[in-house]
Length: 509
Figure 1 (tube, helix red, strand yellow):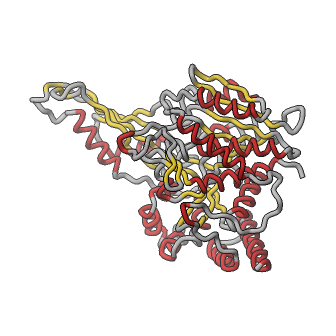
Figure 2: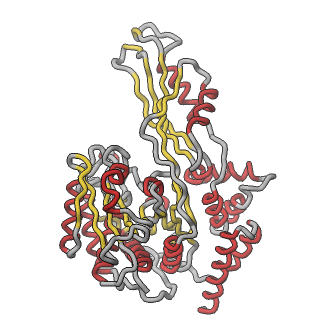
Figure 3: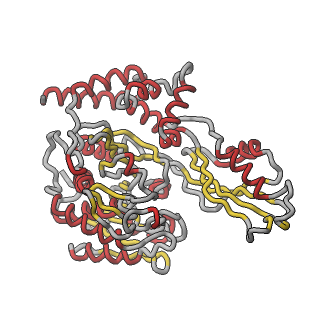
């Protein structure tokens, strides 16, 4: 068994080297990948009661030691954090920041509140490797304290009650992003308790206003307090540990993300009495425009990270889907393959193209008054490197209505270059994640949602996203939705994985 395992790991390393150098085609790569997977260890079997898979791959001793105790403490911290209503707007993250600072201070770690707005403070703390900070080596652990709003009537539990049921912890923020926040805190404290000798500073940062990206966001923190948490590397949300049929299928590490842009669609027309309808009714023109936009699909094109993601995922999917993934770039079957893949999964569709989602409609002041203006909001997500102006040109031609105009809103996301897939930190994440999840593939990933990492990448930070908790697709969809929850066993496993990644990268050898 050990000889087979070593053979598999050697095969996977050769494949990774070939991919990096670009010296093998897709057909050769797939053949090698299949051979390696055939002799690799099986992923962990399904465990009862919602328990997460655990590793059966031998590992070298971690400098962090046993994390079960701190994971149990972290579960309590997560419960408390969920009970703090930090819905944004208005956020009110200062209460959570003070709570986190108190936990750190009990561990003998100096924590500092960074005020960004009334009632809104971030919290930062540092484990030093030397008397003088060296940002060129430092590792930043970042997570946000604010959460999106809820429709309480659609929840089966109190969204801020932190109720435990059937092995799950329910509550707004359980996954996005208070689970990661508690896990970061646990990894940071575990490293302190281990008394490991560090080869780089490790910085803990809990941010505000990630969900809105407004005046209290990480952009403001960087402008006012960059010297407090400047780093070369960062670990944030944005990745995934994909759980399917009780087994971890693969680990996705976010190295890039789409750029959010909001665009107002504005229809103008004569106002008047509702008893005298006209063809120039702004609501009618807006509705027609939104209907056209809602069924429009932008052209597909692949970034290097998305191309690599699908190449590796093709081996893991069932034969039918895998066949079409292998055909995505072929001249004779590519167009049909792209449609099949886009229709199979909304996330895959969004990874391959710029997307447009109408999200809000506004018009009218009274039931019997025809409004002079009607508005809709388009939430556009651009692939890295794309700009919104050419897309708006296409939409203008599509709508073809002089009563309609488009107006880009001022809250656009940050365009940034992808993080390197060749960095030492990415290698550490890949190594530890593969070991901890029984040798499953670790894939580079472009997230369709925006994170604080974009702002960090803009400041030359090699930022990566890894939500380390094994989660099913069903539970992933609960983020920003109803009955958000996290499996407690997955949370425990995620704390352990995250702590080992941090310790492996930050501990001197």
